[in-house]
Length: 131
Image 1 (tube, one colour):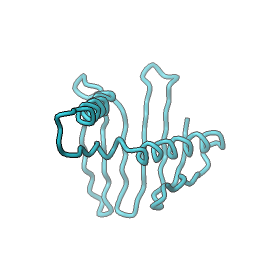
Image 2 (cartoon, one colour):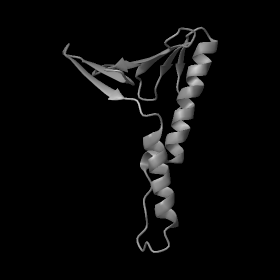
Image 3 (cartoon, helix red, strand yellow):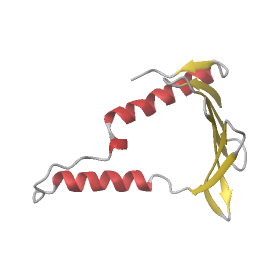
Image 4 (cartoon, rainbow, N blue to C red):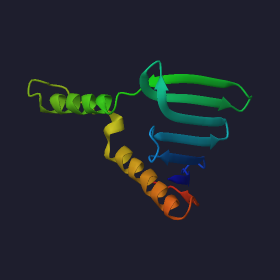
């Protein structure tokens, strides 16, 4: 699956996913005015994770590897939010993790919808709906 999208801030992005190979590949690339961000799922030192490359406008490249942990961080934040929200002894109002908000979830869905639409149109550029 190959998709092309344009985010509400004007950045163009490409998502490539190959699942028919023995080693599935997932690859994102977003081009912006200050450089290019490229993320590829793979293995480094026998650990699954994401290699992140940032090509700055000045030509320099920064590289980092982040071990893949599935959705552990998201689940931990969700459980922490639920515990805090239901703690009857808590006297102060608890602010939930901002990345778990309805708006962030809707933005994720908008990106996925644009990716699917782009794929159904043979990789045509699709503008992600603004929320």
